[in-house]
Length: 159
Image (cartoon, rainbow, N blue to C red; front, side, top):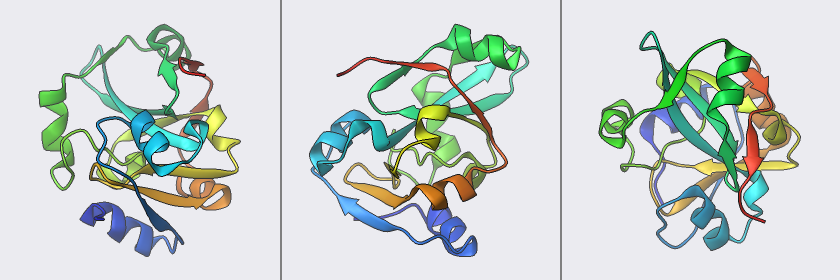
């Protein structure tokens, strides 16, 4: 199990207690949840978006949900679209491609968090590889994202 160097440094600097949960190699946050035997509603996945002015934003939502670009764009008063994977990889150069930790501040990204995660008992998210999740308490997660926007912008895609 490995954790992104930048993420680890950020968590240590912010005095956040966490543990790593291993799981079989997976290619999505939803598969990571299944492999780690944790509720998909408690696994935060990051989606990287760009607005009409080229500003990037990390949208974070439960692993079993899909983002509503229209809803989020309306709430942020921005025209948003998904970034192509090839554009994302260089932004997270201390992570395996596609294993994006869900704390925008670690990567100096504006972030918006779905309210469903704020209400989760515990939170898990990608550690930066495809075989481990960071696990922390709800209180620790909320402390980390206290300066970010919290909105409702996703809908359940898997039961």
